[in-house]
Image (cartoon, rainbow, N blue to C red; front, side, top):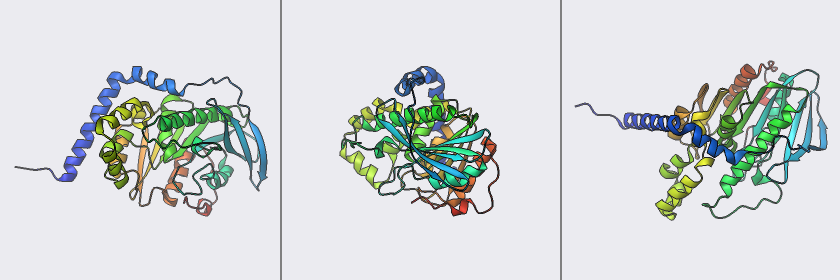
Length: 329
């Protein structure tokens, strides 16, 4: 009698789970999506109220320190990176990671990359997530509503970022992309599902199913967390805030093309969780794994640029340009 190896059993279970998710999405998809997306509505006609602070004038680009009004209150700090010259440029909206202790867990994460890419014909908008804005206070209750509410605010503020880019005469409205890392790889699928104005997405170090990760991960911190919370209470929380789980939107990605970047030595997203999410996601998509940590590496940066160059019709960069971009730390 032939038996399955543990890897084969794992692959079978992954495919069964994926098919189940796709069936559920096809049956309940549209009604539940409309319900979930109500968390991300805003007045698209409200004034952006963009204010400009300092301007850094570099050889081929200017970096503008700006803020704009958030529909959820307060102001969104951002860098607006503009290539010099005239004409219609592509645009990229960048979302950063939230790695504890990282000096680039803010809008600075991709600033050097945005400056390096500007000569290829790209306007960039890099925003701070609510977590790192002035006055933010972290709720110590891990089962409170704050995490879901922050995700909702970030998605809305990213959508306002798209509004800001579209309001600029130098931006080609048909060539706007989104790049999100870690935390902002999780906001990306919501943006993809709800806002069809973007032409391409790059997800870095995520997304993953929050439910899958919380209930099955063998990471020591999540194992300890599961032991500290009664399972019925944990399941109720996951059910209540399923609308903030990137898995909820996996079946609604596209028609924009998506590139998924995952790491093989990631303490936050397992290879199995990465494959699980990719398999159940819809739309045109590509998947790459890198021999790196959650920060990813220069190979990912080159693949990212090649993908964006193809889908945004960018110009080539001089050889060695991307090698000068400091690695994410």
